Amino acid sequence: MSDSSLADSLAALGLNRYEAAVYVTLVRSPQLSPSEIAARSHVPRQRVYDILASLTRKGLVNELVLSESHANRQRSFAPVDPAVALPTLLRESKRQQALENEERAHAVRELVSQIRPHYLKTHPSNGTRAPARVLSDPMRLTEGLTALADAAEQRIGLLCSSGFPPTEALPALARAAERLSLQTVWAPSSDAETKESLTCLAQAGAEVRLSQEPLLPLALFDECALIFGEANNSPRGSLTTAFEIHSHPMTHFLRGAFDACWSRAIPWEAMGDRATALARPIKRVPADARERLLEAMRLGQPEPVPASWMGGGIWTIHHTNHTFASLIGRPQEMARALIDTFQRTGNPIIFVGSGYNIFHLAPFGAKIQFRVVGHLDLEEPLIREQADLDALDVNALAREPAIQTLWEAARIVSAEVGDEALVAATAWGPFNLAAHILGVETLTRALYRNPRLVEQTLEFAARVIKKFFEPLLAEKIIPLVSIADTIAGDHISRAHFNRFVLPYLQDIIAWVKHQDAQVLLHICGALRDKLDVLGETGADCLCLDSRVNLARAKELFAGKVCLAGNLDPINVLDHLTLKQVEAAARECLVTGAPGGGFILMPGCDLPPTVSLDNVRAMLRAAETWK
Image (cartoon, rainbow, N blue to C red; front, side):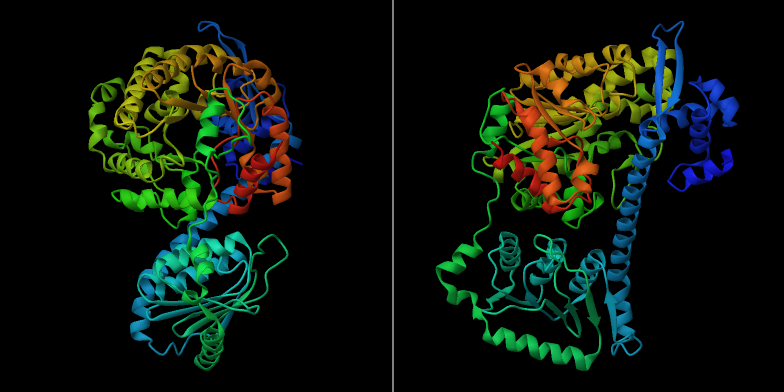
């Protein structure tokens, strides 16, 4: 196959033409220097460093450093084996595609909510609408249910059973219950998740009755109906097919069937003690979960082994039907989303600010790139030259609406559930923040050509991070600080890590611990040449990337530093079944748990597409492991 054909095939997996050209060039050659790569691949020399950095992050290229001296530094690059690299690229391509599809789906829901009222005013009889359509996958079912709940104006009726309504549609149904009549009839079930859904809607104001017979899931919205097929055989089976019906005679017939079920069902109030038990919020978090986490960080050996996700901000936003932008200026709503997620998932650490780390640069003029689903980013680097950095005032952070929202949300969360959950606040580490201030390419070059600029940027980044944590620590709102210096791992050499990462982390961590809080530190990458150095940061707990050799880390840090990790958040939590997730979690526990000082965690932030069931499977594996 020709190089151009290979490049086209790689482009289909998500590489741009320059990335594809560079990878093909490396595959056909021994290790090459950047200038040799530019010449052989015909990629402009000024772009080759960007392209190599991108391919390294995507796991297609490894950098080989042949000399560390600044004066005689030699860099070369080699390709990762295609048998390893290309399946990884495919998985990432699928994940990105899923995120993009979700972004489009959210945009459609927003448009429907804005446009449909105008349509209904001019087409009150819906005369041109097709009488029925088929919805044939879980995402479309949830989207259809959410859109109809948001658009309903008078009455909603639900016949509910295990798996229905889907968890993702509960926020929209709860909102509807607050403004109109929502009647629900529930089939017999001992499923805790079904009880939780019932409780959620009941507490939002829905009328509840319990049926003594099985029910076929049905949803009625004014003059529209959704009638569902049976759930599949997975745990709390997912509904896979529904008919959306807009035919007035058929809807009228189904309304009669619903009313018959309603009349035969037992009213909630008539159930006495059983109704009280169901109305009580389900406490999935063990009473001692918070203390077990703290004991593990003190290198104790709590039983059962504690478990938590790391971050989870994007997951929370996605699963509570919010966006990052929609919660800014609304601390009560942000706190409620975090508390509801804590109570619904059983995850014992609440990471306030996860997903919002980019806003630490907002007061300084950063142009933030919003995504409906996915991490936020900057449209461009914050500064272009040294003078720009000198003009920035760290005190501006306190005037930023997003930061004020995070602070107030943390206060609310701590006041309401701080005795049950371990409340943490999150920030990027100084090196990661500096990469956004300068841009990754500029920072990488400056490590060699202008180290003083790097140091000044890192000093500023450290002041920003301290300024963010300062009021929360002073007010004793948070007992835990989470720092993620994500690109400080495999992106740079050990020598550069020791000079440009370690001292600044040590400074921040010592400052936090002086105020009686603990520190969870995460750095992405396999860290083969610098894993041992992490013990010098002073962090109480090291959250290890899924690429880190956990057995080696346990040998290095046993009795010295608490370890957390290191389930693969994508290839395990996002892609595997419940049983497979539990099996992978047990493998981590077998390696990490003996001797104590261990918390079961994913090896990085939780993707939004991970199912609630898989989150609970991870937590359950720790709870039941002996």
